[in-house]
Amino acid sequence: MNLFRRALPNLVTGVRLALLPVLWLLALLGHTTALGWLLLLAWVTDVLDGFLARRLRVTSRRGSRLDTVADHLLLVSMLAWVLMLEPGFVREQAWVLGLIVLFWAASLVAVWIRFRRFADLHLYSSKAGVFAAVVFTIHLLIAADYSILFFYLAGGICLLAAIESLAVVLLRDEVDEHIGSILRRDRSR
Image (cartoon, rainbow, N blue to C red; front, top):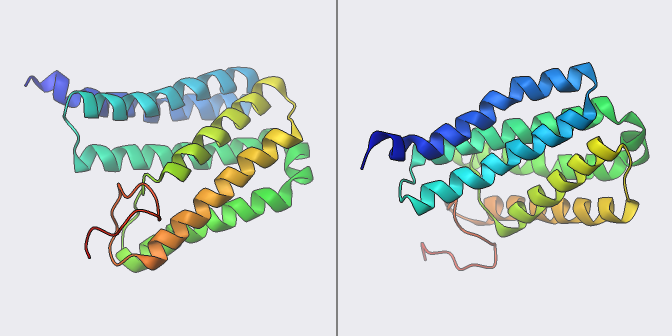
């Protein structure tokens, strides 16, 4: 297998990481429409890197960790951009946003305390939550408006995902990053 083929998924993840400074520059300059469209491109790379790794059969622990770092940096940045660029929305929905962030941060802290590392559990609910949050945020940035119903739907999915992540971390003896769901049987038993 050639080197380029083995490296391709990590290169795609690297594109996502390389987009972060550009995205931050757009945010700092207040170019919300361009930020929204480039954010869409960044999340497409998230879907693409995993697809390529599986399709080319070059999945690796290193690639998975790089993907997790890129995902978390982009999610934290996305939250920061919403706080910076949409203060009216943040004021109106502070309690929902705060609840989501609280449970998300609690799951990250819990996995660090229990297992001394950060893990991306690849839960189905997390994938749905990230998808909903990204679509909502891109729409918010580009349209400079939002639907309260769509926000509550996206926020509810994100909150359930964060609660499931926290439950998996607290109820499992080891981290299985590909568990899919808390409803899935523990393979170690």
